[in-house]
Length: 109
Image (cartoon, rainbow, N blue to C red):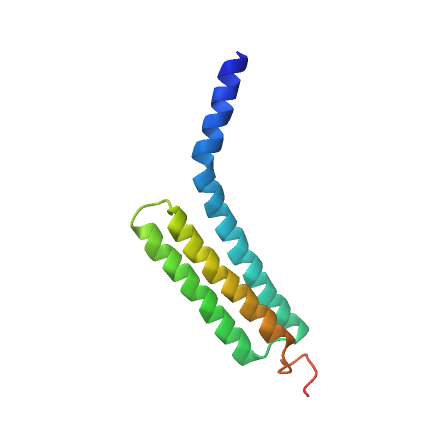
């Protein structure tokens, strides 16, 4: 019984790793969108900056959709590619939130 449980757990880990990576991508995309929305509410992002960031996030989603169109699962290479795009988007969000340009609710310098 113990061996059966261990075998089932190992197979779940092996086959679940691909789905887990997909969840990680979705979580990151959602988190980045939340950061943009928070920048809007706080006034740290101008309308122009939000439009640029939202377009960047849409492009990443489009690339992911194209890669998934080949098959439902993403390869490790595809995951790294999307991960790198998400890393750049996260850096871009941070940079735009910290610059001197402000939105409607923020202070204009």
